[in-house]
Length: 567
Image (cartoon, rainbow, N blue to C red; front, side):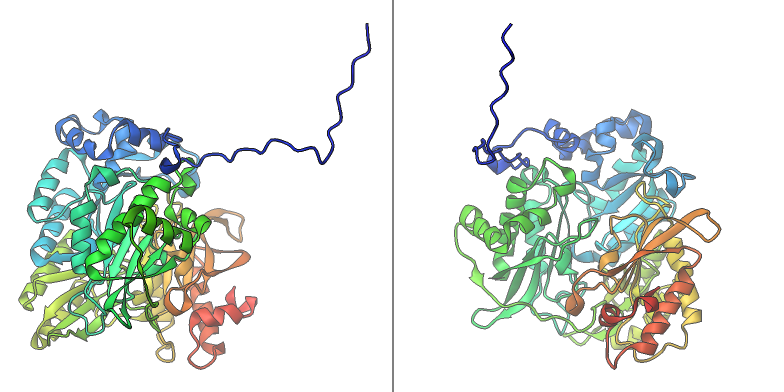
């Protein structure tokens, strides 16, 4: 037998065949096959079709009749998520299967684009809560109303009531064009560059509920405002009012912002868009996302990853060349507000009337409160109310003679128009009370924290240029925008001094938007238990007040502060 011939050695310089890059599921590049269960589900049946099954099958058969693919997928296109089964602690969130976490009740979001409702609509929102949602209602930072304890059996009647009042739950969630944020004071503000309401209405008319845009790689969040009051830096697309030196008032375009576990500040396209063309540009951008967005891996499916990889210049070129078939006009950046615009308090409108902004704690209201707000607004001569992107509420068109009475009526409902900085600056996500992703309690903790800080920090009454915003999130997904808060708290299970596993938080400090656009500073290994939270926030705030420079903002101080002052 001849000896085995040894293999020919490969020289380090021997050329190898180039490895083909793995497809990212981009439709425009030919990758049409479903690449994960979510893509398969959407290909099998357009999610908008699920409404007929809810009305004709599930509402009659009850929770146990619901197909799992609809229950944990397509239901979202009509604002429905299963809520968390009571009694499951946060430490088990990541260890249980979805069916073990599911309760037989639903969270429901009502789509209110621009946060705009009439008092008649507000009363209907409240009545639906009272009758079908155990009087639950939260104002979200997407300018929505969110219910809990909804039964699938009641959905046909709920839709009938909401739609009879001109409202909808269509595409309030899901891989779809979700609610469009807008300025709560659009059309009445003395400071706005331009009223974006007509553009919001046109986007809704052309794109919401259209099957051509109901299968996106992931959610698509948008904003249109003549003021920088909608957190435009962290949207998939945002149009912000700006005056072009030659063409006049219009909008600056931002794309690719977002938070969650991979936060990114949006990028300017450097383009100025007139009011009548906003919907065209919106359509072009959402089409780029649909056709070029990454569908292979769901955690990379947001448009921010595409914008990051391409850059703003290439993204704009594709929008212009492949979808608009014309060039956009170059334009200036919008003005940056010195402090966040939250519309709390009493403010004059450009028509001589006033608007009154009030603060619930972390958006938590109730159906009964909403009904009473509608009545109070009408007594004050108003029929328009707005929800804000900071979980607040604004009554428009109030005659000066009625302002004081309205303020008193709102205060009786727990809605303060001259709130403490802590009530004014607090935000919180749904948390473990209802959310299947959450690890810790949020809404109740926000109430407790505000009460504690109002007592402990009552002496801090001057020198702070804006409320120090404290945002509480129940998991890493940042629904409460923890990375862009002065003090952002990400819920997790931590070990206390006795060695017990308890609810606690990772701390993000000094994040912000506007002048301080960027993400908070994290201290290595630093965690705070829920029980320690009031002590911790008080300590950091007092260190800031004692050691800041004149007019220094909290975010500026955090950058230069000694680590010991932040622990």
